[in-house]
Length: 350
Ligand code: ATP
Image: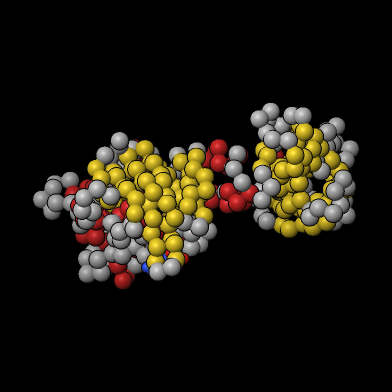
């Protein structure tokens, strides 16, 4: 099987179970992002794949070659895996250009061009080619590490928060450029990130990890719109959760009654909505099915505002936190209508 294949990977440190049996398939040439709370085992998993540490149990194969689990483990330097960890780890005595070109033959006539192209890709000015790592900022060092790993065109690229030290503007541009390059060269990639938007935009597949296990793995859109539980829902973006009840193909909650998937079990549940599914309007402009409420909090956030709305139908529920355009100047105490757009998603009670 080509791509990365992990089966039942376990790792403990003393009595701490960092990985409790991890299964993951990353098809060849695709990109998977791993997200999860701090300490859930993300970096440990990357270190096992890279061969920096060995699992206690399980099997690890890359493009059909068993790296761990049958016979002696393949040492990390024979795995053809590019790694960019949080700290970059550059060669301190080498220039930027020599760090990036480290894995390339000095006799290769295209070496200088490859190095220049990669510097351009990650946003490093050509004038920096002769600087040493200690003359660069943290963000610049991280970009050199990224370029160095890309230069060797590895069978698998492991990226642990590679964009975290970059400024917001450069971060999005670098991420898009790196994702495009990895896709163009069909390099199988695993990215670890804390940033849910980064995971959703960078990867073909997102894996949400919790307590050393994957909670859910799937395409970004599926995970965002149809998470299997409240933890996955909250990890991938703002989620509005409302107590609800399913009966006879309908789900009933404080925002109204909606069609439920016929396969949903009847009984109490939670209804999950993403903020962009809720539209706020004046009472006069409200569609027929809208609920009414009162604005009880406003927080200005630049492009959009978050307003808190207490629903008239459920005054005991915590106010809904809704995103509205900044130009819609709401007032505390104002009566508003809230309408739901699109299919609703039902979660088990957590
Ligand atoms: P973060 O997002 O904060 O980087 P993470 O999800 O990458 O966290 P890991 O670094 O993989 O988490 O750590 C998982 C657990 O294993 C943590 O409880 C951590 O303290 C523990 N751990 C990791 N490496 C070691 C080690 N070498 N010795 C002992 N415990 C370790």
